[in-house]
Length: 229
Image 1 (tube, rainbow, N blue to C red):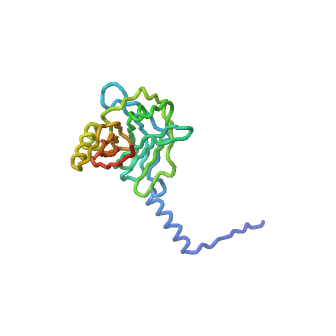
Image 2: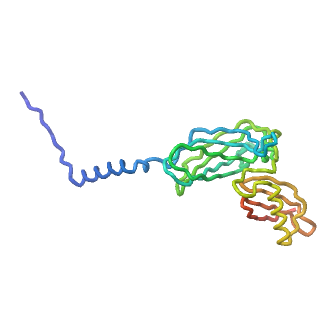
């Protein structure tokens, strides 16, 4: 009867040590093999009435995500509409959350007055990004909205700002105060909206002053841009 031959492979001791240490490292730090957070494939849209007068004034978007590493997360949303066959940015908003590990829901609110101002009719889309420290979601989540009809939305004086200045009338008072303090006559208010997380106020100017666009952020900070007539 012939005997089977048994072969042995001699592995250097240093190689065995490296394999053992690597295995222990994976067990000790399992989170390093995961991304900090992962979004669900899609979120939910709803038309919300934030000022309580019975007509929607914000497009609210909620999406669930799994957080693997605790920390401060920024959820950003870009709202786009189709213009001449191309997607163009209509509005933008961002919100931060200090989250522990686990399941969470992010909420973004887009000011609905921009639909009426821009006479939006049809579907829009949102592009959602997530960032925590130096990490950023590799690809944005893109989701189409329900059909938008501009007449269904109001240009409310209230906006979800996440700051102290959440009413357009407050922003207007701050802009007028800036004009007095800087000896600038702003003239008549031509347009008011909340876009890109700031109040945007357009003034006509006067005979001696140019038209101006005044931005007022939720903390009351003001920036001014002179415009051509």
